[in-house]
Image (cartoon, rainbow over all chains, first blue to last red; front, side):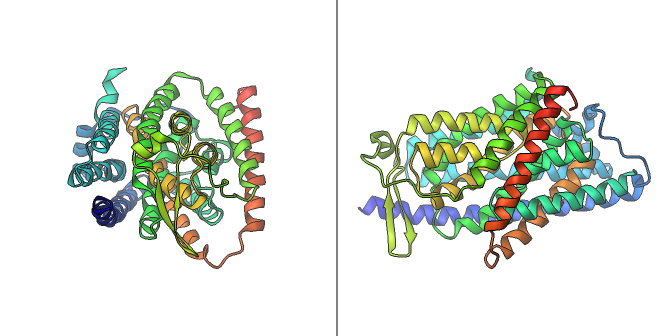
Length: 132
Length: 278
């Protein structure tokens, strides 16, 4: 019974932290995307829009290093992509936080489950470009 | 149409999708891709990439509200996320291999099924027989607040639910949606989890699942910033407003109308998929 009590307490504490993390991540990324969007539209708003033909994005907007370089070069599209990257990173941080929470509870089994999820997410974000 | 006009129109459309999605509880992602592909003639791969990003935004935004009320079950969520994230990775790689017509046709079928499901009122599964011993070992059984005080529940058929959630993840990665329909099958029907618990827990999982495929889409150049910007901001603003109004609104008629819209969009996607119009 005592173990359940500790678990419920840590679960609750963890969920509050997760809630704050999610809110901060979404707000920050929305602001960055909005900022980048204004720069992009101010410079390219009058150009014709064409999304019916698929071309794929240039490498500056695909890879982590390319996006960061492009964004800090003050390109609107690069800044938007950086905001989107922050958004995708928010659930990743959430999962990392959950591993810490399960470690606090000495719950090895769930540390393993959460670890697998984290590896899948990191692979998708960092490793999936060159592998296939 | 120039970029400014395109941004404004797509932003307004996404706002409506997010608003109706939150109000009806069906999620905005499900109408977003058909809207972009059929109305704005956007290539379906760009549409799916932008939709995935907006799914992460709404899931993370809504989870904040759900977390506090004690319905979501972090253990069920984490365990099933192993299945959904691996499935999502698989679905995202599949999306880079198959033709856009095939994606359109699969999307159509999922839409028609979602429309059918959402036209029915959800009912809690009958309180189950024996709990799955596996669920007990995994510490999944829980308690949720109800009108008559805390109510405990047991989780059933864990392997079947796990397998179905792999499929849900795969669809999410292929189509850029939250896959609410398969969630209902897996968590409500197979595992017998109470409706409120399954809904809030799955909302929690959707963002992580979408992130698993969004990484692949980003690395493959399927996420276009000029398109994703109005989509993400529009859906996020629309769904936040929808969640605010939800408490007061009578959603029964709205749900029915929205599910008909979904089914019609599904039929059109299916038709365009088979005739090669997508």
